[in-house]
Length: 315
Image (cartoon, rainbow, N blue to C red; front, side, top):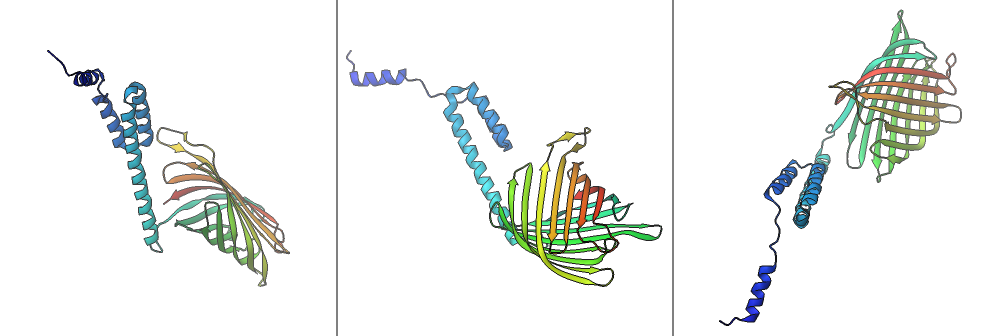
């Protein structure tokens, strides 16, 4: 019998070539199950395990990973577009979040007493704009006499130029008869910069010209041009601290310092606090506030301190 040598050589070569390896069915099932969860960390762990167990199937595993990453990227892009559309179409009273604070305080300085402290903070973030509203009240009556009467309302809009630089505006009202003024109005505007902006630490500074009108309890009034310097500080010290089986605590400090200054008077408001996360919405806070006025009204001292222990509910 005679053979066609070229055809025979091709058949022999084909029979000598091993078939392409396929990923075992159990491995494919395991990878598909991880992909179905949508958890990127879990998928990465399973894929790494599959590569080390079935190194000959690395190409198929890589293809599965590429397909998963493409799907994840598409879903993230769709979610980001949907979020942007929702922000742009939101009404004036939509997309606000905030927190309410209620508790007690102990003060020293112009007053030495115990009383009630309450505050409300509202925030609305858009694509470029951020709006912040703060309301605060400290009030006490002792033996039929008001020993502390301090109220504050402030509105601060911000325009974010890029990830670091922003412009701000500030309109603020204060009332503190114990410090000697029945009302004080302040407006300011300027620029700010985020020095640090990470998951655990945020630090920003701002500054600009300011204008203040102060109405004193004796009926006199004064208006002054000056400036404002502000510092906002937020540091998450601990990630998670487990107190009991059902309660987690997160400790973080929040710091804020605002300085108004002009030719004759400088006021400083410095607040430092420690927050403990009790639940998703409830926090407890201990804070310490220093208020300094370089030129106080007659009969008042320059420095007031205030220690607050409060509960905060977020919404």
